[in-house]
Length: 409
Image (cartoon, rainbow, N blue to C red; front, side, top):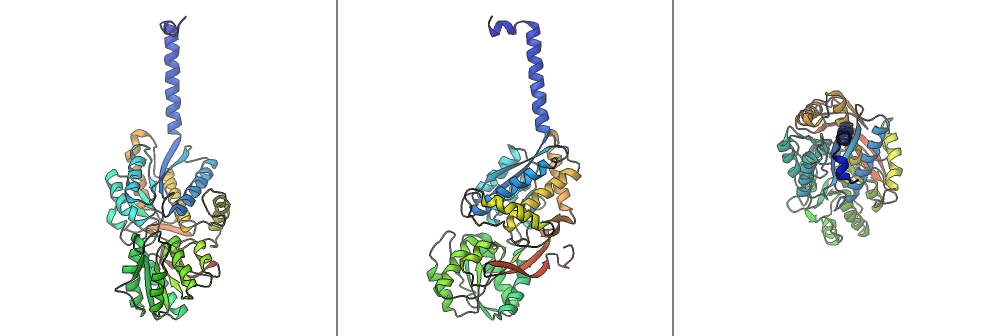
């Protein structure tokens, strides 16, 4: 007897229909039991190391949350896309996460350049996005109400880091060198630090003609030679740590061990190994070795995971951006638990609106280093630390708060 002849029999047809219905119901149940969030990280390209550690940190957090029962009985699923730190690719990743994957909210992208292109798309699609690293002034403020940053404006941080740097190293003059291909690096070097330095009584010798290089450039000997010829007391480096390492190594080679200052992109233990004798000052909201009842277990658990991850250095340590992106996911999870998220296909738009409203008004959320809230510009109000790296380790020198009145941290 053929399959077609069997299906002509009424009881067989009824059984087949029942099986199909049960399968559909089970599929729907599986979907309802999964709560989807998205992440955009640069797992390839010039910032691949940060993207890969971000991915490992997110997977660790996903496992921890699901092991503890998930979110309102649903299994947490973090859908992660690589944007290679390319703005157009980041925007496309957001469209895919929002449209195809139907996530409730998105963590990332990492760079300010990618955020400047992606944040407007978030407003069009009406889905919350929150960067783990962007700190160029005004990027979230220009894209309210769906854009957030779990970071602090570099201009706010420099007003605390520069006075410490001046007093500690008796700096009266500085020279500037920066990565001209990176948005936040350019902002740090050409807009933020010149103004803050001069307001602090420090002369920026090459203010009108800062020295520059391009992302990925391996030979900066000419630029450092020119920097050394300025005869300055200190050096401002506008670059992320992977690019700044090239400059610092060349400074060491040329016997130019002047104290360095920069923004949050300098924070990495790797930069301290490039030239241990060169003092480095930078702001951070998290750094490996940071003390605290909440943050130390995070660092202790994540570090061995990173060191077993393919494509990462054997002595890698968690970065500030690993801490920031896991805080973002935790905030979204908190919103899902407390804002009445139904987590159904027909309530997706309403659920996204609820998450946005919850995050906008969040107060005292406990991050790894203390409470977090957001200002009207969508930037985090949280504690930060001016840290000094010397002889291979960071140490905290000044604690600050990103709110104007110093409250909320």
